[in-house]
Image (tube, rainbow, N blue to C red; front, side, top):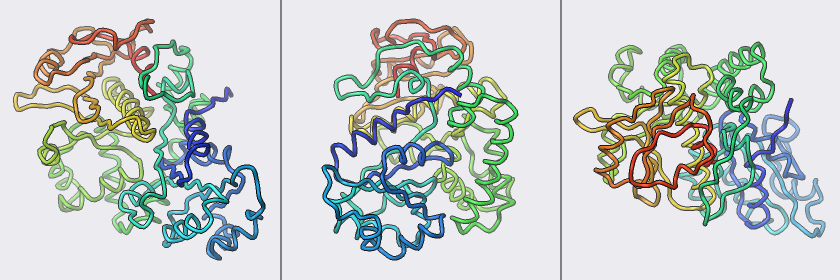
Length: 402
């Protein structure tokens, strides 16, 4: 099994070398958070381990004493707290540890759910942490694990090995199935992960009682990746209220089953009034090649946008375009509040969408791409020709991201 260094190894190494703030690492179950963080840490405490839980509950002084963190070192100790969000007082625990001992210890915190949701409203921790959102492997990450810089956010195009690209397409980017590349293992892994998500994560971390109805919603959403969601239709099928459907979908997003994209408007309130598009976080199980292609590219774009934001390289956003005449473009990536590039995802369609021409002119977008999954790599920078739509191979464009 071929091993890959991850870009998140580089992100955390840079953070620990330059910042005193805690690092919160959020991401889906089995995306590799614990493995990556343990590579950086001296001390590991897992809330799910009874002995570790006892140590955490005893408070920061016990941790400092038990692990000899008061000894002078050339660099601070690095402590990793895994699944700490399951502790009801996790924020006050971290605040106490950080405020009292931040010169002695650097703190990493991981969570497969709710950590990034809580952090957005975590006023008691304001200014004490940076959030890093971890994603599965992508095309670019199979090629390199170094970080982009402020002067070169986009990479030079690089060829991806065909076996790497095919493994990403067939098995997805989650480390175990991607690296193992065994169909039988993948099917068993996928089934177990789905069962754990519903029967463990959702049951343990939410107040939802109607697990059977939620399971039906997960099944319905599994067939709708890349589609605009009509909440009233879902509510009617599930026989619950529209507000309940919205709440359940927000929970599923916060627990990384999928994500929502809003239509892009300069006026944010207009965007919030429109129905969003839904994408699964794992494209590997999607049967329809068109849906799978669009989801594959959506996940790559979201990873890039999250990575650029988390590294402090600017303010980036991801949305889609649709007007009253039903003209639509799959994705718009914005940079510092302005449209930066458009992407229309296709599996094998070589003819440029008329909507790309229309929206590029209307919004004055510098770059517009029709990204084709089954086209061969071309060794040419996709961002060298602004002002007109281009048909580009996915293997080329995605190699320039994160």
